[in-house]
Image (cartoon, one colour):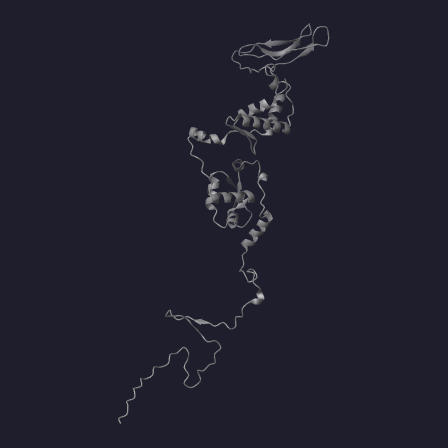
Amino acid sequence: MAFNLKKVLKALLLSTNQPLSIKDVQAAFTRFHDQAPAATVAEAPAGGGDGDRSVATETAVSDGGPAAAGAEAGSDGVAVVASAPVDEGAEVPVEISSEKDPELYTDVPSLVTATQIREAMAQIAEEVRVADEGLLLIEGNAGYRLMTHPRFGRWLRILRQEPPPVKLSQSAIETLAVVAYRQPVTRSEIETIRGVSAEAGLNKLLERELVYITGRADTPGRPIQYGTTDQFLEFIGIKSLDEMPASDVLSSRQIDEWLKTSTTTHKPNDHDMGLDEEEQLPLENVVPVVVAESGEAPAPAVADAPAESDAPGAVSPLEEPAPRAPVPPETPAQP
């Protein structure tokens, strides 16, 4: 029976709760061939040299029993395994004979390619999905992992006595998107892009371990920079940041130029507002307005009026005329 790679990979997946990467699997196969066998396997011609050979298989040793110490050729040409006494308190490893599990320990390839591992993992994932036993094989950024199906999440929370998960707010999701696409990014850049404060959103993302502090920027003040964690990749279900969808609105270079121009603001003129600079209104005939202290409606002042203060009997426009004496009514003449 040929070696069954799929069964070995399934056993390795069930044996750990950590992601199993392709490099880990290849390292396991390398160590399998590097380890010394538990017993010496000797081959010698059997009989009078007819080409047949007899093989001395490895012997399972129990506690307190004899141990294989070496192999010596006998007079009949058959390898004889010599035994040596072992202390009663010594612990001797017990290896299962490969004849009992030929599909696991016979004809083990010395090199397993990444393509073979991916194909076997794809078959396991399909079998697990068809079986519908509440498990899923997920490929993350760190490797493959067997996980519980999300529809059984309520039972797991009841078992662990955990509260139900809380959804991220729209503000936190927008902040997380800016960090994911612009990392490493400072808080001031996030606030410039979003137009609002990002302190509450960043604190929530740091608490959820979706964002972490990557360092400080080489700008005045050395502001703190933020980036996404590996848990963020598992949260959105991708293996690397390269799998994130590209933005079809603005490119990264356009956002960089916009951030530079937004930091150096200037007073908008008519050209920025879409007006023609040649059609500006003249400012020579503007009439100044004098505001009265009494709160009454302001009265426009006369501009460019001739000065009449030197004329006799002239009254200043800002001075009130003196009151005149009342004129008595005329009495009718007597006939």
